[in-house]
Length: 224
Image (cartoon, rainbow, N blue to C red; front, side, top):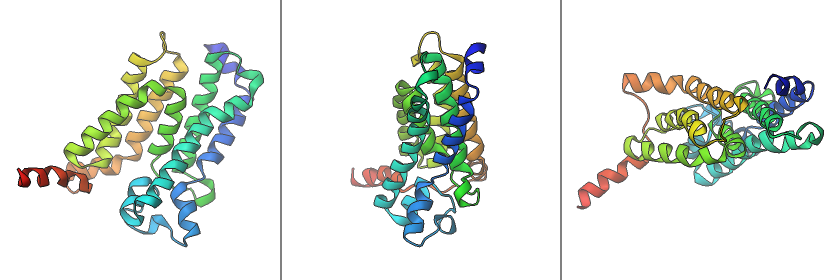
């Protein structure tokens, strides 16, 4: 595996830079600028899909999510694939994809085009995971959806989905799991937890915002 990391130079640096620049194209900030709105100045102040949904509606939020997931997928897949000469082995391709995907997530969180104030990186992480560990998307989405429906907390659902990535890659990934892929999973889970530390603090204090979906259970109880 050491040889794989050595082979990344200088191509790994190129992938990292391109991935970061792609990640810096924040969906909510780009679309918001077209509408003369800074999404960071409304709602929770976060440049992500959840705040976009709460403040701008589902159409705007859907476009934001598509952009954010798409750039993660491009950074982890298309950018390394463009360097055909050094992607002959799957191990090298995975390592390059991990570098590109992580760089895109960093770019989303600290976008160079928007004063280094971006979102939390979850959507971009999903795009990268979909390319590098597609089998993990199902368990992650299931955990996210069940947690959201039961608790109404989007932040908690995202944190748990991020943490599930590690065992999902371990159980559902290639056998044996390439170290680059497991390193990527651990890094993504860590980043998701760190960027959602404000949500964790609010959950502990009991003042975290709930998403409206939790009301579905109350409505069912009243109608039964």
